[in-house]
Image 1 (tube, rainbow, N blue to C red):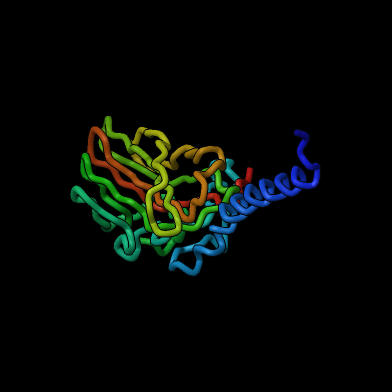
Image 2 (cartoon, one colour):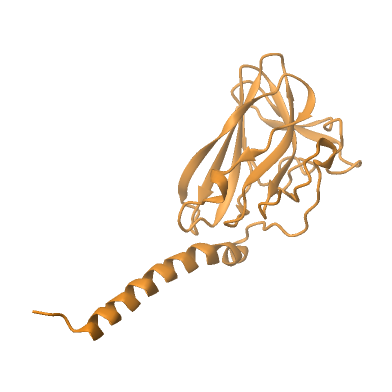
Length: 204
């Protein structure tokens, strides 16, 4: 028996409405999360312009560890120590960085993220042969972990230097992502990090 065209149109509208609503929820999670006490990117700068990276980045909460790693989750002996990264990327007044003994890890506070967020960078140094593993932790509205993305592992041995641009799923986020955290783990030796930044607008 032929179906009434009217009912087919109604069903199509309902399906499109559900899909649209889901997408709106995913995109709307970003500004809404500001009410959950998350730190949201506002002012940006070009801290890595000295290395021909002119993207606009937002500073991660206590990303320079001048407040002793306030809001960060530290384990394995990770701690804020005296001695800033040598370029003073964030501020010439900064005096602190984060020390990561071998095997130690540090996870940043939750931070707002949008569909346009694509990369992050920081400064690092370490013992000869050491490296830093970076993971991106995506969380939902109730802080549930939606996924953990392997951002890559960079060599940290030697003096302070900026990390490569660490990709974040190319700007494609798990559904209903509300915030993101960055987890740093020292591998193969002691390392240090400082001045952690997120590019919130997928700039070039």
